[in-house]
Amino acid sequence: TDVITFPGFQGPEEVRAAMEKSEIYLVTSDRKEGWGAVVNEAMNSGCAVVTDHMIGAAPWLIRQGENGRMYRDGEEQELFQTVERLLRDPGECRRLGENAQQTIVGEWNARTAAERLIELCRKMKFLPEMSEEQEIPDAGQDVMQDITTPAPVIPQLWNDGPCSPAPVIPERSMYRRINSEQ
Image 1 (cartoon, one colour):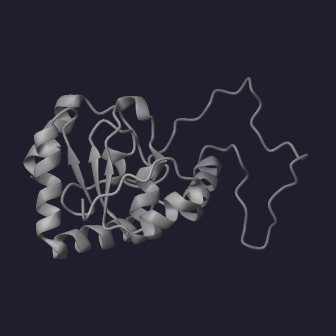
Image 2: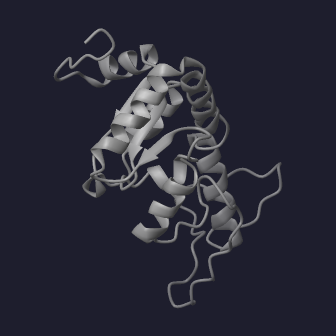
């Protein structure tokens, strides 16, 4: 009780302020969570994130043991042991939090996502190629392909981060990823 609080409902500002003061952030939702933007927010706040492996963001944002920890869905003992390890090793907790923050600040951020989306749209010919001096076309200008033209193949430009490939990850593969890096 001296390290864990259950404050009840909090508004977005209070949640973010609590994250900024926290060292560990538990995300115990499951596959019904969708992406789970709270994972991004906690990482950006420098928390050591411990998350259920089924949350949508987990396999894309968490690099097991490098910038956070995933535990297998429904494995409460695994969750307990992971958190206990972080409570007993403040240096490890701090290292995960710092790496988590760097992941968001350096890669998984709005600017990177926007730049990559624009580049991807240009490569797919949805936007015209532009020189540095040109301005972005007005919304009224028709820069989209004719809908009768077949869509181009989506190029793979990045291996990680926004606009990188996002294949469906079989649950067994996630278990192997978690277990191999425990």
